[in-house]
Image (tube, rainbow, N blue to C red; front, side):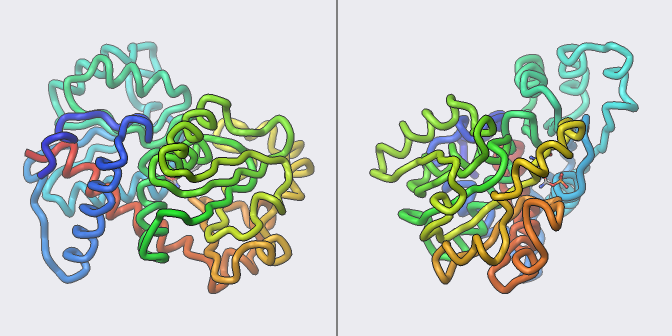
Length: 312
Ligand code: CP
Ligand code: NVA
């Protein structure tokens, strides 16, 4: 069991070194192969995970819940609407109290500062299950999927088209860390935040790889091994949806755009997808699409995170 990750928080991809990211990927692959072969793992026997959700979830909730069960532990689903948080109890007090009961906390929040505060006041590992800034657990599953499909990560080109959001931020950090070239294509004004782009560029320099942000979707996708998109309006941005749909249309992943990628390119989406908006059925359901392998890998990746952060 990795000593370095034990007891740590996972709030951002930037919390991980390249070595630690690979350790998680390799452990996820190991757990996946053994689980599919019928072996059971009890790395978290008797341990509990509190899962706080301020936003809806299908994959993240189920992957963490099933993952805890498969590792011999117990997950508690806590909707923030049903907690005293809704009535004004502070994040700090919530963290202090939960730390007395459970061995780890996973939280899906609006403000990234909420996971930072949970980690600050908690005595147990805190995992970011999506914030407005990042989605690190998703990205571990994504790079596990890319690694499985290509047998390597180094030197590949990942194109992300659409909104420069939380998923784009975490993808940028991981691409820089792992030596993957990345090109982000967004409408003007919807680029990823400068901090993530600059950090990814700084990391990429060590590998001699490139990180590019453009407003040209075709340029972003040209020659890409992986074409990735996400919803145009994230959770909490529903009121902007209609205006965005018009503006983002040139960034839709359709067969025409896919033609600019490498012939062997795969299509990825963190899901849920708004079919007919950021992606059309002809791509999402094509042979190039790996979206359901990607979703399955949430389970294996999350088990690795749980076991390495919370295991003995
Ligand atoms: N990709 C993802 O995080 O999905 P959920 O919102 O269903 O958890
Ligand atoms: N960017 C999306 C990801 C959902 C998994 C959102 O934040 O809603």
